[in-house]
Length: 249
Ligand code: ARG
Image 1 (cartoon, rainbow, N blue to C red):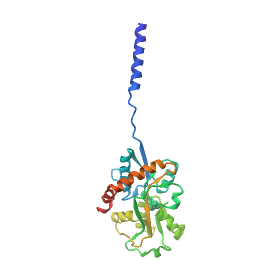
Image 2 (tube, rainbow, N blue to C red):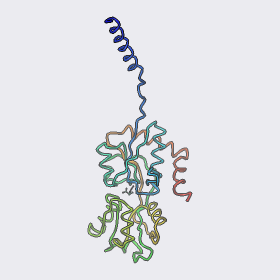
Image 3 (tube, rainbow, N blue to C red):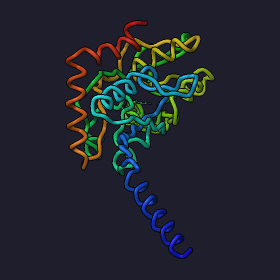
Image 4 (cartoon, rainbow, N blue to C red):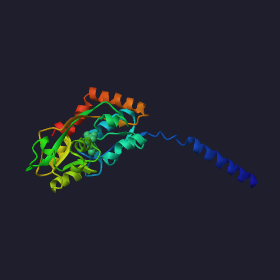
């Protein structure tokens, strides 16, 4: 009996050992997390089914596909993105982010993949007709954006209302809580399309370049990203993505 038990024990141990040894070392695909403020169509927005879409999301996905990463989108307030990249809480930030000298002190930027223009969104019957009329007007912006920074510099903190999401700024415009919203041209067009009674002034406020932001210590990922981005530019994938969201409309 004792022998039998010993044998059984031995066998159990052999099986247990074999099972452990055989357990396939899980080939985990590494995940890259992308910080964005998904309130910025056509660059990043939330679909009705809760999934994320947009030019930035598609470009990031195409780059991850090339590099063999899974992509996870992390939606957050815009003014938290640079800090999230800086602290390493996310792998990179891609959110219609304008390259600025000030941000360059905190993060590294990838090559640029798109151009943006700061424009002025008003109600159709607005008295604001040019940039000059912004003096003394109540200006709505998204907190931490270049629109916020330029307008606060030019017209003073007291004239600028900061919102965490653009949709809130647009609501405030519709309710006459602000006289205009300063924001990027493509999202402005999307908001005009989605809301009655809004228009964009043809006087632009500032020209900008968009790029993804990386942690200063993660130059390896930045290099991989730029290489993949270059390939997507060269083979027409980037244009195709932009066409899908902008030019095709
Ligand atoms: N281009 C502007 C900036 O970098 C605005 C970007 C806002 N992006 C967003 N996903 N809400 O400041």
